[in-house]
Image 1 (cartoon, rainbow, N blue to C red):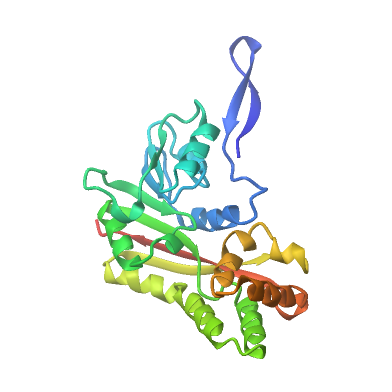
Image 2 (image 1 turned 60 degrees about the vertical axis):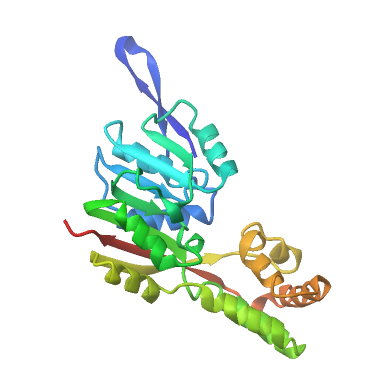
Length: 275
């Protein structure tokens, strides 16, 4: 995440300039952050609340762009993620702070911000996503902008359809129902537009950017660091019998051509609070 470049300072001394680009090796968070930055209006001196900040994608990049006259507060409910972000930060970017907070229940003492961002955040707004967005907008200054990204409905649909067919072939109706409920629960771009419209935001932008995720068959799929870390775990939870879950998923993993390319939808919600 952290980079550096050299420049000639006074008296010919070489000084190190720390840079904070989005990490190229992160094949999930970085593409979503790129979509977020595409929609976000930034200027030096801005104050930003970055929710579900994780270990700092894109909080470090935001802090670099607003500069020392700005302020960035990154919050996450995970103490481990906050500790990791602080370790990466070290003594750099002192106008950037990380705190362990639940974005779904921000206390009134938290100030208003020029910008509120949340990369891959909407998935954590459960159980009532609209109320969470409304609470965030309450902490947005008049004339301020909110930009949120999330894997929207349609993400990995070919995979869910293949798993559903495998379940159907084995007469696993209860597991099918649970899988259908999981897929339907994912918010769509239209859902997001409805939230921002209902809150009276202006200049609303709701877009989706496709992102292909590469995987191999068998164990490469079943233990894919991205897929198994979240999406596939949700499928396993559809089963009471985990041995049966392993059988189903093994059969799916060996039929890779039936559900690839595997495409995620990078949903972006952006809007401005009335000035």
